Length: 476
Image (cartoon, rainbow, N blue to C red; front, side):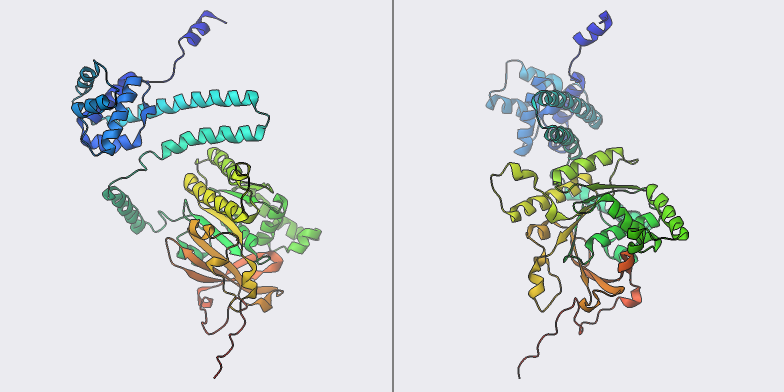
């Protein structure tokens, strides 16, 4: 090793900026608005200097107690906490005189945040290395490492997520409203290219957990694939989409999407009895989907932690560093991350944990998450076959966590084997919009859902939907 390399190693130290720490504390001391704004966004880890960290903790206590911050109140708080020394009052006075204005406080905040993140990365790097030396489970160690690194980013993203005055949130909403008035597409969610559905939902909204529920063999997987196929067909090459299927291989998913977009039947694809012209259409469809940022995962025992880990990786690799849609097929097949922590738990508890974890993931990733779900079989014994929120299988927590709940049902059970039948998407819960029933035409040979035109969206209240049996007339 050269002398230069040895000197570099000898002088290696944690990233820090003592002057920026002093200026930040000065801004808090001399400007009450800075104190109320920035103190809730920080903690003592922002300060490498132990004295500065001690002073900041005293400032945090004063803000929590709604006490004005100045040299005297901070000194008094330090004295009461037995954290003062003979020079602390003098040092506080010197800090308050470093700069006459707090106008650049945000620049100092950014410097401290950057150095804090670097110090945390160094600590985590050491912890990861130590774990790797002793761990016998590579998957567990990898998940732990990813979680530790992601937590740093999540904390940074959550800066300023505490209480704030309503005027600030109001101004952000007014700005959003102005954009929408100027351009109706300015803040729409991800388009599904189903016109009525998009008009009802304003697109698939970021941070939303969307539940698509149906009885077995009704077509919930097919409907989710139609959403993706629509985006491929309409050339949405910028959207980054991740689909996790717990019971169907990647090749089977691709086969279905090709059938949706080419008019080649599923039976022809399964038997490879296709003409040259059909093969050309299949190849064109394959090229179109290859140009999209769509990723498929088949893991039969996936957990929310595994899915979140894969999504964070995908987001970091996407061109715009964001994830636009996650689809999970389906919720009841997932395993609980906490199953190794609890000695025993009911399936209802597991599903509640999974549901909450998926909602948290949607918020952390700021993208819509569509989770397919089974419905309980209690609906089979009812005269009224219309789905209800209570029909969500195994847990009421799904209903609570979801921003939107959609039920997929046949309009007439007698059409079960028909080549073309009528299906209903019933938006039964919509946290940020209207509830609505939308009619679709289902072509089983091509596993394709086509939205019925507006002229065919009227529902006759006198008719029994969903294959319900007619109610008996009351006895005279």
